[in-house]
Length: 228
Image 1 (tube, one colour):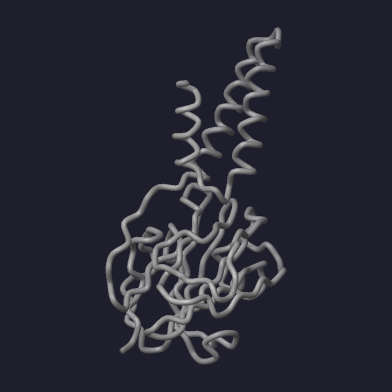
Image 2 (tube, rainbow, N blue to C red):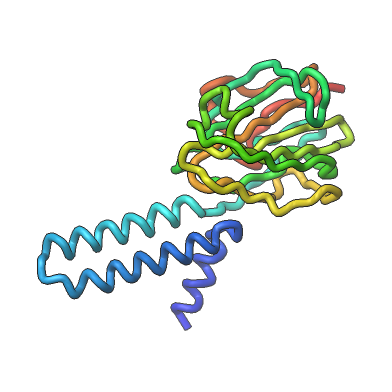
């Protein structure tokens, strides 16, 4: 019974968006550890054991899904991703806001939590997946040329668009949502696997609460306040 309990605990710690990869890597790691016991060379045996254990721990760390406490703020826009603020700039947004906007970009390294969360409450009014390149995600151009998913939320305070952008290592964007879905600020909606970036595009007049170089926490850090 103890092993069943431990399995349930680990399952709760791992995001449902990564079960397929996580359990595949677990299987590979177990095969490596078991197979290493048959190697005659101590050097090869320990090398395989250490590699298998490191692969498992990296995967466990990557797909972890900690609970977050989302602040109750009327007009606040919450960070949809863990990572570093790498860019704050004014841009022209022609897909959903269809006007000038303020872009706040959060870069996620492979060591960050990669579960993404809705930045604001409202209704999903726009969704588009765009195939593209896999440039390093902190490059400015990655927002327009990399593979990405665009999600627009129509909130009571205005429209907010955010982009899941695949990076050099990231090759899969997960966003199982549909137009018309209800969005709740801080609620999980998907992830980007293995290093990436999320852009949040806000109406002009929004009050930005973060600076470039700061570390954002998904579901907790307030990126900006929507204009009145």
